[in-house]
Amino acid sequence: YLSSPLSSDSSEYSYYILTQQRHNMDPPEQEPTSLMIPLPDDSIHHRHMLGPGKQGQGPGPVRRQILQTMKKSRRKTQAKTAGASNHHYQLGFSGCCTMIVCMLGILFAWVQYFQWRNTFSSTTMPIPVATVTTKPNSLQAKDKDAFAKLNLFVSAFPGDSSSERINGFAELQATLIRSLQFFWPLEQLSLTMVCDDTTYTNMEEQENVTSTAKSLFDPNIADMISIKYNTLTNHTMYGRGYYIQQLIMFWADNFTDAEYIGFVDDDTLFSRNVQPYDLFDVQGRPRAIVGTPEEKPKSWTDSVRYSFQWEPKVYGMNYFPVIVHRSLLEKMREYILSQHPQFTYFDEFYMSMIRRNGPLDNSEAKGTDPNGFSQFYMMMDYAYQKHQHEYDWHIETDKCEHFGFPGDHCKPFPRVSVHAGWYHLIKYKTKQDREEFVSEMLRIGYCFSLPAGNHSDIDEARCKKYWTGLNWRGEWQFEFTPTIWRVNLTIAEGMHQA
Image (tube, rainbow, N blue to C red; front, side, top):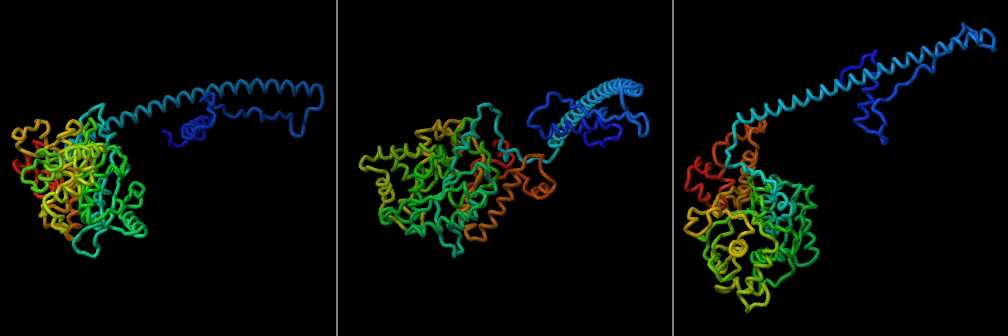
């Protein structure tokens, strides 16, 4: 309607429409007192001549004749102007009616489009329901608010870039950063990276490490990344870099003031699109996907007993990101000291814990270290036993009643990541293998993150081979084996259960 050509015999109407368009698109500083803008009055341009070359020259008969002629002309002009004004109003009213009719037509077309799209979506090949996280309708949902207060936290070190075995910054960039930049909502990204003090000996070296670390990320999100350092420590007392990295995480609240801290390792691989509801429930509580102490490393279980003087109930080295309230870390340190009054500060306890079963082991064989421990095992067991109501628990076990867990604590929930460095143990340890594995996981995660019925033909062709069953690789397997629901149920039953 607005784009139809304007006819030459409707100049007044054309002027009105164009004026209205200009008013709608670029409102003037002062609003007009009326939507009707008067047209120029051409009557003031009329000239009345007695004839070629003749002008009125005095008050004689000619002058009177001129005055009478002017009066008649003025009356005719006024009548003509009044008619034009009335015609203008009629055309303006007609234009408004036409605009209203067009707007109603457009509204009707939109309604028909959405009805058609919903119908089409219901007939398009669906993505398995178990792989799409949907949030219940809730006016009080607080998952987005909590998500905005989350700071991801990783302790990293440069490593040996010349080694074919992936490690250090090379592993951080190829695994965590690559998948994070692909699947995380970057407008809400906040990440703190702390380098342990084995990576530098002076300020110049520290600046080089900072520059290298920043270069690992996309320049567009560089402002969202904070690079910090642990103070120089005595390696003889605290052990090698592995031990110092673990200690840094116990003190993460010294490096960020975020309300929630989400711990990730440098080999964390995000395996699908991350939404707030994946990490927080509608009450704003962090989701805690954990296992049980059964068949877990004995030294790790022993470290929980030693630290808290109780039997562990849940195993926290089971998913990433491990999200805790920032305040939990200080409360945990204080509780541990209350159980070990012989120590005056936490680091003193820590140095004792890593020597509890013998001399400090500085070898790289972490699995055989009798003094081994998992900081996440300790954090989540403490959270379960002392701050249970502050988290949304998903304990992966088929023995819920046997362990005395409440039934609603044993409901499955899909993960958003896998632990790439320990996925199938000896696999994906070289740079080439890791790159291929990450690429495949990103493709799978992309396909299972697409909304059902809302994807292109190209996406359907690309993803068809993956839409054949439960995405257990990306959502139900963390390290060695699929979760208990995948092991004990068929794919169809597992999807129905999830």
